[in-house]
Length: 121
Image (cartoon, rainbow, N blue to C red; front, side, top):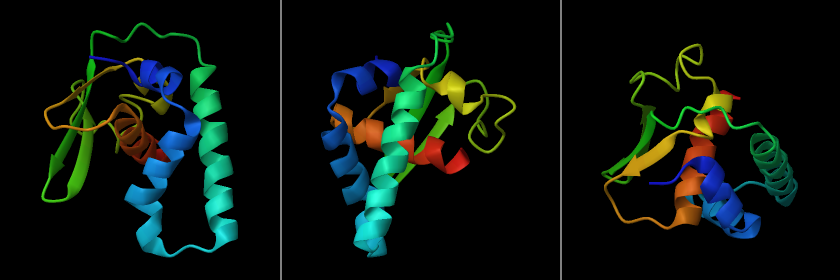
């Protein structure tokens, strides 16, 4: 298992963004300026996550699920982790171990996690 920090270090930003766009932005038919804005936001967000000091939460896990065309994500600390940031703020998620039971590339997995974390930021 890897952490989001490891995935973000391993994967090229362009590959992550291409997956992010394909999975979450393409169907919204956004203008070019909106896509560029999303690109800049995601790039800054990733850089801010990568610059955080390690937090030692690797004993907990971030679970990513996929069912009927929908992704889901939650922390093993609290099933409503993403809805209740006081239990697991987004800064802590970068060092959680990631668990999933379906085939997915590292860049696509990064895009899915970033999408859900960025929504709460």
